[in-house]
Amino acid sequence: MAAQSRHFIQMMMSVCFAATFGTIAACSGGYYTANVSGEKKVSRVDQHVVKKSVSETGQIGTITLHDVEDPMARRPVAAQEMAERSSAGRVEQLEQNDPAPKRQPNDPIYVSLAQPVLDPQMEKAERTKGAVAEQIRSEFAADPIIKLIEENRNQSGLMKPHVLTSADVEVSPKVSLKEAYGIDRKTGKPSKMLAVVFEATITSQVPPATYNVSESGHALRTLEISKRFAAQVKQVIREKIGPTIPAH
Image (cartoon, rainbow, N blue to C red; front, side, top):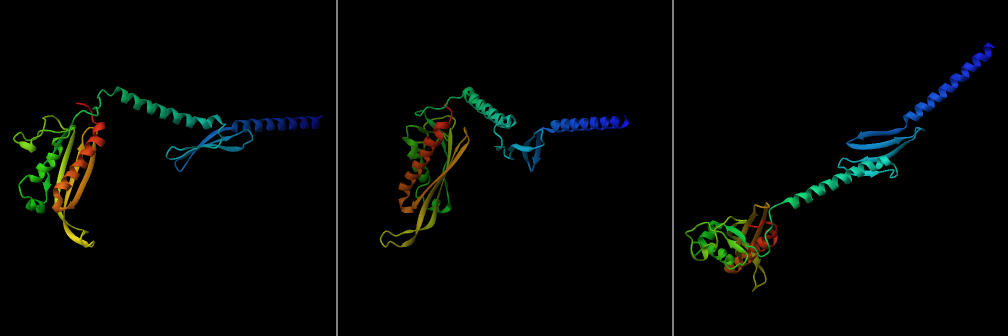
């Protein structure tokens, strides 16, 4: 009788142990998250204690799915998609709520053209004081879109700007003479020459933008080069800055 009792107790202990082990194994199943070198790794452990990778999120937010059927794998992707849609919606809303209308293609662009800065060699070569500045300004005089604003009310003639208003664009020119090497047209060989260099910094305040242009060539062709230089400046103002500035 005692032997049967001991056998019954041992059998019951075995059953309880097996049930307990099964419960522990079942409870051990689930999802686990680990951060390794800045990367978030999600794994799933099933009731048989088999570990499977579900997804990885890299340091820059890239998501790699290892089990696309797992519902947990879709969570970071769905969250990222939702964040992108929300961000796009905010940008669109800001654009719709922006009360400032943009200028139309034929609306004037008001430009502040500063006096050009001449280097010492160019100052010596300038036959008439202010001739270079007047030549540059004259290239803008007949432009149908670009209007020079008034800076000095005492100016007259070609130096006199068209209107008095706030500037959309500021242009700061610089002119210098430099020694350079070119090809002699007669001999076809390299030869040293005196080159004139026109440079300008073109700045727009709204929206903020800065452009630099330059034009150079033989000093004996200063007039021709100044025309090409002015054409470059006007092209930047009309095509790159003009479409983005607000209307007056």
